[in-house]
Image (cartoon, rainbow, N blue to C red; front, side):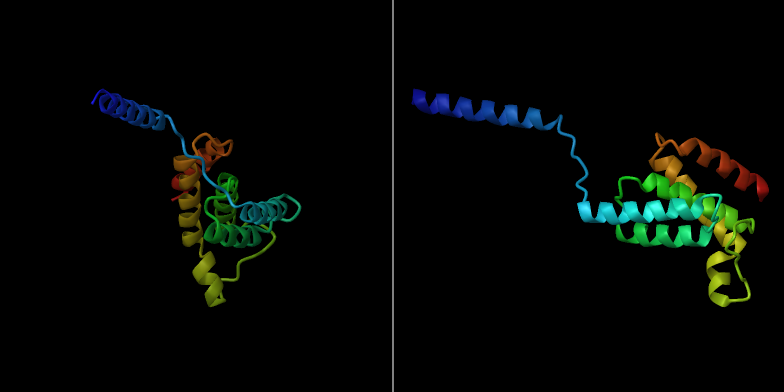
Length: 151
């Protein structure tokens, strides 16, 4: 009988210890190394397209959409949200070297200035809301203010 009591007490103590130890567990996001590499490549290409030499904002958006659809857990998605938001904003102002042809129905649907401003607000707001500690968050807030002032 005494052995049973000791076993019961030991079992309860082990359970309590295991439960209390679990409270401090922080789950890490598991990242797929192949998806990370592919997304990183798309991000690098997007940065090159975004730069002052190319200003290929449509290309940036295509790379972002491809990456976000396939791998929204990308470790640097905040950078991609910044690039997509700024590219949308610049295109809505008809900036960049890739011009939008609103006479083409597909381009009008995707790149209408109103839609681009909405997209810019969505991307930059997501960046500010979900990744407030990102180094791009402050500039995103400033740009959001500019977009809202332009309306």
